[in-house]
View 1 (tube, rainbow, N blue to C red):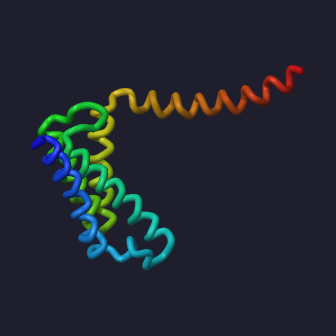
View 2 (cartoon, one colour):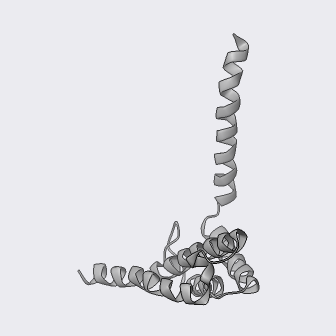
Length: 129
């Protein structure tokens, strides 16, 4: 029962942080240009993902303590306003992601190759007839 309560508190901390992101950047309130709003939405989503993964200690498999610290740094960088901190936060998050998911490139490329085969295969059958 206590384990469930701690997990709920960890996940609630992520939701607790969201209003502070609004204070730092009005683009989340849809005030600003389209590209600014899009950039802030993407970095906020990545920041929340990094924070949740760091708090839970799991991203496709268990995360070691040093990598969790890097995820917290990534979340701070992504949540803070400014493109420099966003890029640093994204770089850290992607580095940890590629470390945690060793076959990530293979998974991504396999997904796109599968889609390509499905599309070309559907036309190929009609051409043979």
